[in-house]
Length: 441
Image (cartoon, rainbow, N blue to C red; front, top):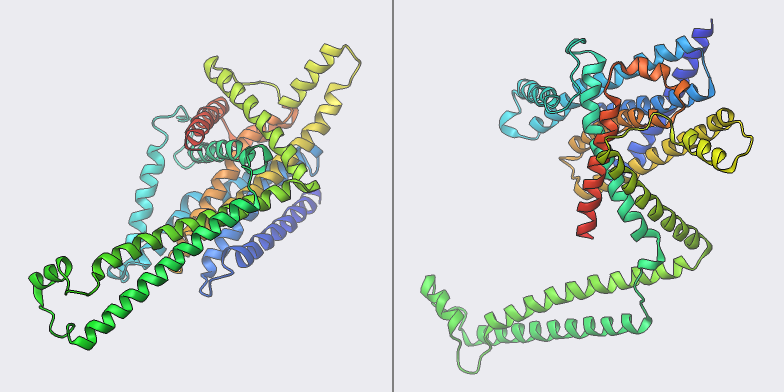
């Protein structure tokens, strides 16, 4: 009876997650597109639902919600479904919609879709060769073999996004990096822009009057044709007439200058708005967050470097370890185990919420930047693939943030994975991303 109740709780939550994914698809991703493929919408929503269910099961592990056997069953089922979607279903439909956009292959799109899926499977499987993730004890299509490869891709994406966020967040939120912009600067730039626009209008007016004069004199009809005629029209002009080619070149240069001035003006207005926003209470709050993330970024870089140099992976979750160091330093009586459980729950909850929110915002920006009416379905499926791999990898890394007693079922479900490798790999890619992005900024 308890298993049925636990299953009903899980199914209800999955339906709610599916509905949220469906609304996000309709209201955010595809709100500007009338043509929608319901297969794509269902796949995206199902991927989102089962991804969020994994995080829900992590919270249930800490809180002790549901029976342990029920949690194990739903962990196993959830991982099987999400791997089935990420490895088999989404890649096949990506290939199917790519082939469908090619007219020459439209009649045999099913065949070519299968060929693209087999190509993906080959490279997906060969991905495990350079990394110490192979497990000869398990079969080809076992959870361990599939999730080990998904984890490599997902951890790489997580590390790159974390590196970008660690560098970009201080520049986005901290008022320290804002340049001082005054109304005088904006007025001066607007004056230059207006002068450039007046020059463009003046030169275009000259061109129009010159063409009218040439038309009235009959020079347009009597102009020599062919290659030599074009050369002559460029290099020579009638006495007293305007050199239209030279004026057109000047107009093109001025239009390019006007575009640059317009972008600079818009940037100054945006900077001024950010300066005014930074003076508000909310702006000061985000400014404080910028300093916090700057300190966190420095600490993360330092710890990642230490972990790589000394080949070190923590055995204890950071919360428990931090509380133990503080208690031993202060010499006070404190129930470390009790409070570490509650603080770990809060920390994991914050990580889960910020991960979901941050990834959805990033996916939305990415979709609007590169999508079109023909490629939108393929891009949404790619986003679903990235989202699923990102969340699966999050489970691999969040496991280290949990106290040891809560890792048991997760470790049993994930199998004999090289968890230490994924943490080291995250540190390596994180540092590479930090230095790469930092150099560009």
